[in-house]
Every structure is written in C-alpha cells, then in structure tokens.
Image (tube, rainbow, N blue to C red; front, side, top):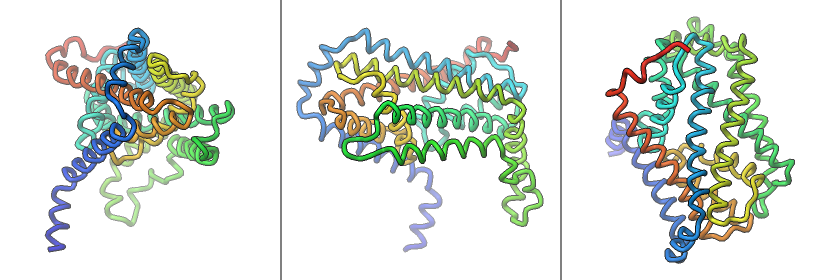
Length: 336
C-alpha cells in the first residue's frame, strides 16, 4: 500500500503539487474574506466612494513596470549579442505574467521568458536562463535596499514584532547571492566535466553554458549598474501602484509607508507554496496595514484590488499569447 502511494505520487507529482498550490491560494483568499470583511455592503460603499481616476492611474503603473522590465532585460540580452525590440520583450513579459498567475507549476513566467528569448534571440536556453537569473537577483537586491531605506525612515516593526534583524539578514544574503552570481567561478562550475559524480558530468554542458554566460557579466560592470538602476525604478513603480490604490480608497498611509510594505510583502510572496504568491501576498498586506492602523475592511479590499490588477495583466498576457502567432510580422526580431 505504501509503495503504491509513493509510486502514484512520483507519477503525478506535478499535478498533485499544482492542486495543493491552488488549494492553498484559494484557502488563503477565503480566509482573508471571511475574517476581515464583515459587511459586503460596506465594501460596495467604499468602492463607490473610491477615486476612480487614482485607481486607473494605479493600474497604469503596471504598463510602466512592464516597459522597465523589458528595457532591463534588453540591456542584459545585448551583452550576449541578442538584439530584440522593446515591443517584443514587453509582449513576452506580459505573457510571462499570464503563466505566473495561471500556470505556475507547469511552466512559470521566467521559464517562458527564457525559452522565448532563446528561440527569438538564437542563443542557448542556458544562456537565456542565466540572463533571467541576473535580472531577477538585481530585483532582489533592489527590494532589499528599499527595505533597508525603510528602516532608516523609522519602519522597524510590524505591530509589536521587530523586523530589523530579518531585513538586515535579507539584505546581507541578497548581496552575497548577487556577488556569487556574477562570480560563478567560486562554485567551480567550469570544472564539472571532471566531477566524480556521474549526474554532474551528465549536465556539464548545460552548466558550462550557464557558467560562461554568468562569467561574461564580469566584463560588463557598468551594464550591471544600469540594470540595478532599472530594478530600483521597477520597485518604485510597484510602490507607486500600491500607494495610488491606497489613496483611491482613502487609506491614510503615505508613500514612505509603502517603501517598507512592498519589499516585505514581495519577499513573503516568493514563498513557493501558492500560485504566484496569491493568498500569501494579500494576507501579509492586510496584517501589515492593520498593524499600521488601517481599517480591516479597507485593508482587505485594498489587497484584493491589487490582486485584481495582477489578474488583469495576466489575462492581457494570455490574450497576447493567443494572438501573437497571427502577428508575427509585427513581433519579428529587429536590430536596434
């Protein structure tokens, strides 16, 4: 019996994990609504009295974020001799958001982006994935830096719980990981072919592609600085997204509050137990905002609006994914 259960799990591991992640996300959202919202009529009244212009302005920051992500990605791809237009990369970023929100385990947004750039840019998948890795860690470093800035601005606790030590640890770990990524020789990846482990030798070619791509960034220090600046701007666009939506609902939190909130929530949402951080992000948002004095129902509604905006971008990415093959002439690679 035990062996049959283990065998069934191994054969259906991806499906089982997908179902579990869906169940966790749904359960967390249901928990949020059931514990934080007492009256749906009050929620409707808050929505009626909300500033619709600010909500649209908040939603528009996603377009800004998509463009910044595309430019950041393009900057890194250029170092590998890949010349793709901002339009092409923006469409891929949006499609990636669709996979992140709706198909997290089967493919994932970053995996799709790596594959798409590899195909369009005519580079190895390992090299394309390495570029995504560097890009992602620049985002982690920028988030950690904003969190440190928040500490200096006086945001040192959530309720009665101090966050100084966790944020400092996160910042230090981010810097260390960033250093290791641009110094892969410390992992001795270039010597995997001589490894005594068979499974390591088996993937040595793939590891070599990753190694060679990562090591190449040592020649592009100014590019890495430029990419980090783009990451700071991208993080700022997310902060503006949250701040504008909060103002639209009449929530009394200033911009500096979200310099603290956004990085903390982003880190929590990275925990890979739900779909695209759904549920984790919303509940952590409510906990932090309520600790800062925000009304429970407004905090819950705010978190659901942020989720709704992400879903809108995901749906848009799905539409692009469907229609893009019919407009290949507009999305062809062009040298810029």
